[in-house]
Amino acid sequence: MGGEALKGHLDLLLLTSIEAGARHGYAIAEELRRASFGTFDLPDGTIYPALHRLSEAGLLTSEWSEDGRRRRLYTLTAKGRKALERQRASWENFERGVRGVLTLRPTR
Amino acid sequence: MSEPRELSDYLAEIAGALGGRKSYRMEIVAELRSHLLDGLDSAPTGAGAASSVVARFGPVEEIAHGFNALLRKRRLRVLRSLLALALVSAAGGVTVVRSLSSAYDPRGFASLVGGHPRIVVIPGKPNAVALDPNTGKVIAYFRHG
Image (cartoon, rainbow over all chains, first blue to last red; front, top):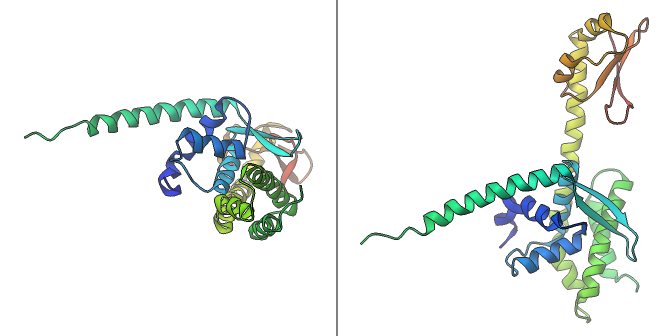
């Protein structure tokens, strides 16, 4: 799935991948690729402006880790956790609706 | 392990396409560099390793565009706040505030300026200042009365 199709859902995917704990960009990109079985294969570099945007919105905080290679680690804030809950609920609702429609069968 | 020339050139190209202060650009490049080096560590060794890591990372224009759009939005926010302050000042609102208190948080006016700055009027002085509520730093001066 390319970048265009992912645009509306990228925030939800990024917030979810950070939910379990602090992550750096490379780990996030790998996680998205692995967990989606390769479906979400957007250019790695495009997640960074999104991570910075989420940080500016107060949904993430970041700090540099000096553990070997210098990397910026992102963590969910309380505001980010609430936003994630909202977005996840909204997505589940949408997904339920689409699934319901897709199960319709033409009458003969 | 030294950084392959291909990665250095790619990062230099990104740095050149980014807007903003040098320190801001360097921070971004440092973050992207660590990603590319992590990618290189995981890539199969061979002549094309650096090329495939760069290709997977994406086009320079697309990445720079994402950061530059953020920068433009940030600048626009600051500009809007300053403009709102100027409008409040021009409307003479500060004079009213002055009559109420020497250091007053004018909630009515705060809504006009987006709820951000705290306006402080010093009695006997012709200038008022707007303070950033988070840092306490002066972000604008304007005359009142």
